[in-house]
Amino acid sequence: MILRRRAFLQAAAVAGVGAVMSPEAVFAQSFLAKKKSAVERVALGKTGIRVSRVAMGSGTRGWNYESDQTRMGPDELTRLWRYGFDQGLNFWEAADQYGSHPYIAKGLKEVDRSKIVILTKTNSESADGVRKDLDRFRKELNSDYIDIVLLHAITDGQWTKNLRGAMDALSEAKQKGIIKAHGCSCHSIEALRAAADSPWVDVDLARINPAQVEMDDRPEVVISVLEKMKAAGKGVIGMKIFGQGGLSDTPDRALRHAAQLQCLDAFTIGFMSPKQVDDVIRRIPTVSVAA
Image (tube, rainbow, N blue to C red; front, side, top):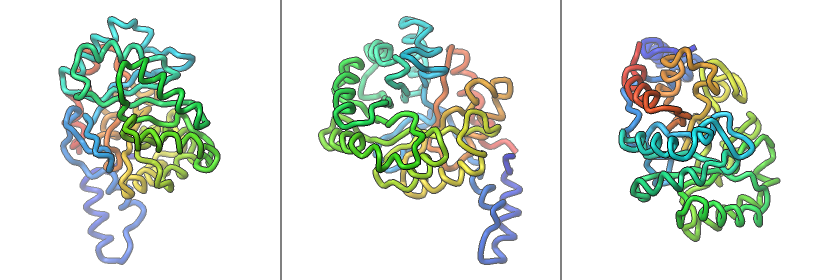
């Protein structure tokens, strides 16, 4: 349940009498309303990278080197990304397992590379595997550098110990300018908590929506971890905000939840048409402040 601004102010007033805010008041503060835009440039934690609040995702039902977006075909997907860019969305999200790199390379021919932020992900778990992936990814993307690279779909609560080689390879790539930031996408609450505690994580991609669909735990539990990440200066990006399509029939509910969350810098959406891009851009300023 989203607690609105009035509820927060009431809770905060009560909390001001005592030394400690109640859990309800803290949760309400997470949703303190402020008018937002899908296309405004926001700082991604302390990375120095600025992105549109909404990213164009390429991994809806993505697995085995394809996704709903890549199944559109390269020409249609390129037109869609170009359309989003022309509307102000400069953030493109990809992954090796989506098979979307060649499609992004085609899209990059249509725009100025320096004006696009590319996030992609590797499934490799060793230093050698990550180094080989980065070489291959840059060839597939036809780009000398990649803005953000994440370790993909982490579930291991001990991943910061068990994937040290992969982490070191990404740190090395960042030092060489091959990438600008590194981190992980998490698919368990244990992995998410480990990411919040790790100073290595520059950026985290986390599953969050109001209905706990395709998520790691209850929304309030996930939000508490994301608040910790945000406070530590990490870039926090939301995914599965529509519950992989499960909340498509209630777009205002899903978008309101994501847009009002103060712990999210940005969130990614797997668009399938220019009409969907226009609809999200139109809705966000309203739902971000709706009572």
